Image 1: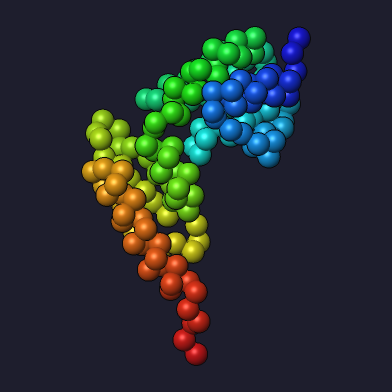
Image 2: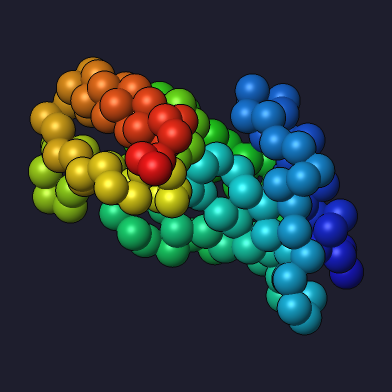
Length: 150
């Protein structure tokens, strides 16, 4: 039987062949016989009990046997490739970014202490969200760097 570590390593190699790079630091050993792989910001894959598991589009669970490495890599690639939410999460790691269910709208909420006073942002497009997050980060980043009043 394949160990979760070996299965995840084979999956990392298959993902790399498709252009999805992961690092050893993205692999974590969990309690029991489970290993996780952070495939992309917000996409965590679990491997254990002979299967790969992750939550895909529409919050649906996907389960593939560890022997189906190539098929699993292709499914993950299709999920990540060209998805604006994953691209935005990579560009703005200080924010929790998600698509509002049933709409095309995007939402971002501060995910760090430095931005705790920043507002949540709701936008109609990736470009609008990106512009607004850059503006907010520039203002709140400046505030965080300024010395507090005496």
